[in-house]
Length: 398
Image 1: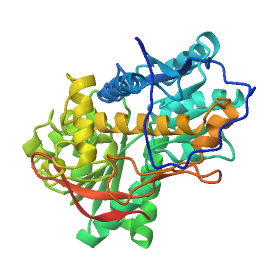
Image 2 (image 1 turned 180 degrees about the vertical axis):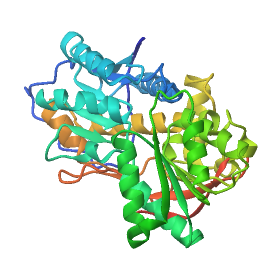
Image 3 (image 1 turned 120 degrees about the vertical axis):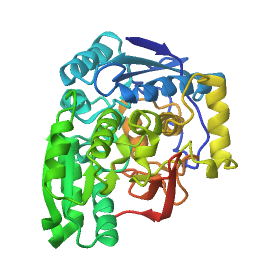
């Protein structure tokens, strides 16, 4: 699948860099009128629940172009379907770089997929920006200085959940279901680190593969461990399958799920929203299905954007907030580049952001520096009430 759309712009609270000197060597894909970007996205395959992210990013690019583009240039996004297959991701990335001549890769989604392209892009010194993953590997600026993630790291998120479990159930017997890749290992490390000398509370830990047609056997195994607490790291499809089987077993553990699988429409609804009551997760973005945001200016702007540019989009799907917010980050970064759209300056400006995006929870900022590529370090816990995720407590990070 090849989606060709236009580009982006936005105002933000980031400090603008000094405009670049004339005669800079612009990145490939940059002309006097256009900035060409590339992306791979799972429009098909086991992670296709994230497809709305690619669609809303393309729509936001249309919105930005309608506002005049970035510093007088339109942005065009080539978004290719990789089916959540790492070999396909690398193939499509090479095509975008070598055949299409994109300036850089924007928001490549998925841990194993973006990892497949990371070495290639860094060898060629091509920015791989705002990767759609919280794996810590995407903040390793010393080994891979051209790669930067966007969301909170899975290790920080795992530690937040571990602290919550210890507070809520000090004598918990914990079962863990995790994805068998680097993202899963990050969650496990963070969760275990968060438990500290109480790591023995984990009585069972089982992995799954993204393409598994079912996780019934894993859930049964975890249930039989005698656990009274369950932590699940999964994307939406796996979250729905896990939730359904847990309730089929009449198992009612303290149930915590990773934010990456917490979409109401694709992670909870397929199993039945009634089955999800009481689930806990973390968030840095406002849940669009939560009525408390009805009068929030950032939510009103998002809603107006969706109605005009993505009228068929699911207004309860947090993926539409995620894609909107990532593309706002991109727009601010490109605006900071001024007239210097060389790859060196693009990565320099990506590492020089301090912004409070409209759909981030209050108190959470995206802040990067030349020595710290991890833009977000806090999140709020939230609990599902049958209709929406309702946040509680203040933003925390550990």
